[in-house]
Image (tube, rainbow, N blue to C red; front, side, top):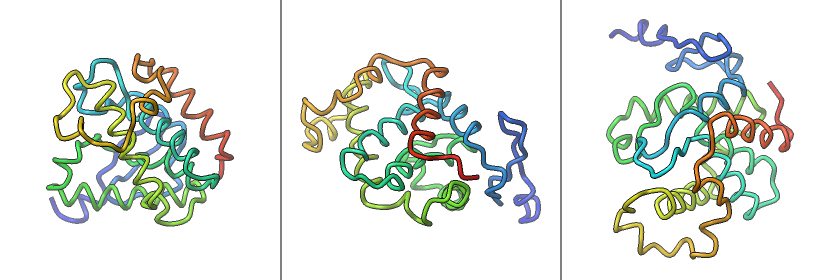
Length: 194
């Protein structure tokens, strides 16, 4: 595929927008599309004991960020840290490391998301967001995987008491409920700049 074809490759979103993943435009980014898509995309490639979406993971990240900071920008960044996955598949990190095109596409979409919602450039890569993303990973491994990887079970990032701060997620939540909760969280944080 030549570069022009790549840049003209598009998807049609839930709200009917035309989105160019290799040439993202912040005007085509819509919180309704993000909430809808992330509420239906599964984490861990679906290898969980209950349905667990990228949207649930994102809400969990925002809740955890609020324990680390009062900055609404950082909490919003935690909520939106996987927003690019609304526009392409959730690729497991061990695989994503070997797919440089996906990494660069994800980065450009994330910068467009930051711009669309008035977030400082690069905030989704800040230390708090990276920390809560890892905390969520450990929560998920301990709570919703049938057999957590042995290299995670000994990790001391999370104690037993703080792995269940969102017990509804370890029981499974419908995509409609996650969609609503994601949007409610977004608007509670003052989202709406587009």
